[in-house]
Image (cartoon, rainbow, N blue to C red; front, top):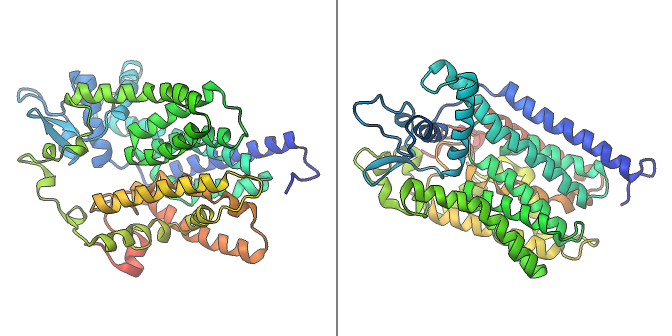
Length: 437
């Protein structure tokens, strides 16, 4: 279980760092080269409508007075609500606020302008790199560092990193604009610090609790349901280190959350997410009054649960390599880590809570998108849970099974990269279950 006798530990870390960098570079460069282009749909248009309003009109309102030309992105999205008689994007405010800052800088330095159609795709590519591809790379680096903390050699740590980079929905989605990729990256940072301190591999320093809190707060602001994993890790930290976890971790949480709730108050006059105020979606021209296609589904809860996990949009049918994480959650078996059972139990509870929330509270599988995209933040958690499985893999048959699961997952990841947005275009829909509608 130790390092190779021929490679000293320090050099082993350097070897792993070099290989990790190559994997991450290949993942980002590969998705940039192989994606079919920049997709301008509801997800990015809703945020660009806010960016345009903030920079050009100095307001969150995405509708403009009749005497002005319309906001060019407002007609291109259904993700909008009416607050106090004015249209707003329904997307959480922190990412559009940060995007507006970057756009204002690019506009001042390079003259790029959202009113100029020729500038739109270059601007979108830069924003996707900043808010999706770069976080994807950072998240992979923190995942790799976490894996290396727990696995006995770089040879054991490299396969789960490569699988996370190329054989999960993260690879496909991070090539286009979405909020789940940066949230998943922030979660990987958060769990790196939490797991390091909980297992004694990192000293419980104040700055580590602070960074745990900051990254956990970003998860909340960017993908609120995924903060179930942050809460699970935070409760474990509070149990073991009550005072520093409360003081420094709480301070870290306060930093992004104060910006998030401040922006919510600025935009809507209410700290609650607009998703908690269903009446805001009911206005005369709202798509959500009479949704179409997959958005109009009303399946029995049991059927919906099956298809979001094991069926046509299933996380585990499309990406079966994540079943290794399920095995790790329910049979952690780490004799060198006495807290493995507690950590696996906390992660399993958070995953089940997330699953119950989406199974009970949603109906459209994340809309016209590849797989069940709302599970994206659970992907790195499941890959971390798979680390004990990789630690004890022995024999050709076991590795052959992993390669088979990886091959199916890699194909799904390729499909996702080619078209992360669209209705029922997964191979599971074409070959097994049929389309949802």
